[in-house]
Image 1 (cartoon, rainbow, N blue to C red):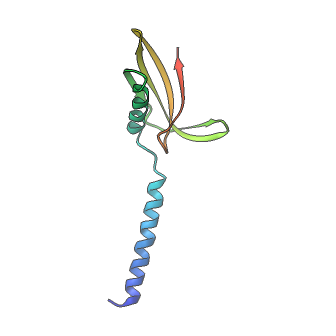
Image 2: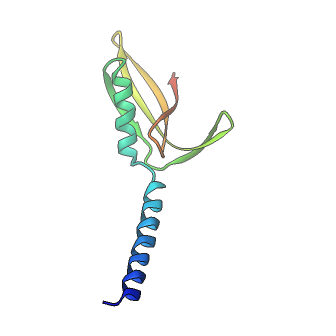
Image 3: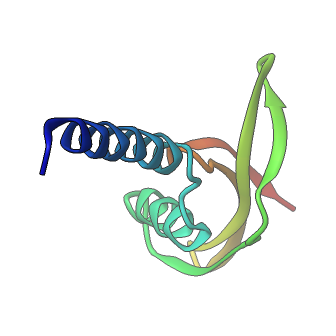
Length: 103
């Protein structure tokens, strides 16, 4: 194989690898993984008796910052009473953005 072909193939491979890496770094986490992260955080405070998550990401603005998030909910049993919480999880990082207790 001559050097021109080798260098051309190596350059094309490097460019393709960079493009794939860039594309993979911008992918959203799966909603199931977002729910798992939220449940693990809530379980640190006590048992979780139910949970749900919307599979479609949403856009919200919090503190003048825009986020792509998954919205979900957790039910915890506290003193024999079911307490429901709604949460937003950042779809890029898995960080919990906001938690509110629902009535």
